[in-house]
Amino acid sequence: MDNLARLKNILETVLEIAAKGVRLAIQIYQNVWLFLHTRIPILGALVKRHVKNPSTVFIDAAIFILVVYIGFGILGFIQIYPKKAETPLANNLSELYPFPAAKVDATLVWSHQFLARLNFLNTFSRQAPNDSTNRPPTDSELRKRVLEGLIEDRVIYLEAQKRRVGVTGEELKIAFDKQGDPNEIKQKVGKLYNMTLIEYQQILAEQILKEKVKNSVLVRWHLRHILTLDLASANEAKKQVATGKDFAEVAKTFSQDAKTVTNGGDIGFWRKGELSAQIAPGLEEAVAKLTVNQVSDPVQTQFGYQVIQLLERSDGVDQSYEDWYKEALAKHKVKRYIKI
Image 1: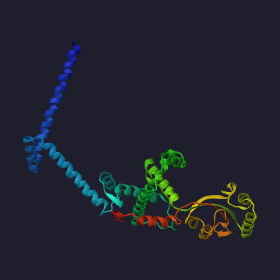
Image 2 (image 1 turned 180 degrees about the horizontal axis):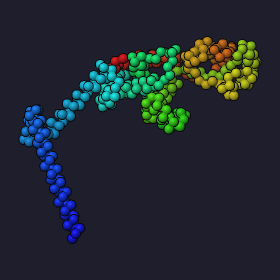
Image 3 (image 1 turned 60 degrees about the horizontal axis):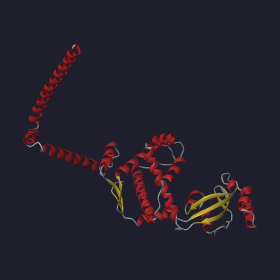
């Protein structure tokens, strides 16, 4: 009985407190409503409307939500286009509203993609060491670089679809695993670019797709070389190969390139324009004249003297990537919405 009496007292106390709370809430509501009703007459009209027809509550709520959505949409439009804002507000609104940054044929590049990529580069630029020899890009130059890069990604995607080229999950996994430990990668890209691991994997997939499209479209040369520090050694190496000695064996004897001497001087596949950009224009000119298995005369480069052999020449367009992309871009209808 004592337990029942104690429980009864507790329930009575709880009910009394609840009743006081309800009375207090009603009093506060009445006072607040009286204040708002006198200051904002439209609220009184709304209440009368809702009391008369309760279903109008849902209609008015929907109208209110729509007005708020449109209002923030207008704010987002102003932030992203005329003001060219790169603020957290602009980023958040670009995620909520479908504001396009550019259009390539019938496909869109979205403003949230543009602002995210811009944020990556801005974060990296702020942490990069000052280099007096290289002027950092201006905001306008950076915005243009990001926008044109996203357009290039879209063009590559469309060209890949045309050629039925894609990136498999296994290819992405292999490329990702080559980068190192996932936790270290996560910390590194987060610190350098303010980028998540998923965003990094997306960019990595785009890079793989770009390389696969290049390989499917452009001519590639498979080369091996012998690098010497003086012309006499290069001439002797060329002479021994010309008399029938195996190129790989001659490379082991003469080549000063420690990275390739153990694999017969193989330097892999190169596309037009890459040798000129990375080694020397003269070397690319010499390679372009070779037939398969032919060996070049010694060519002087910044590294010394190089004797090159063309092992394989793939089918494809005999252009640099830059020239091919310029022509490919011209075949697509591109419209840019973001201001630079």
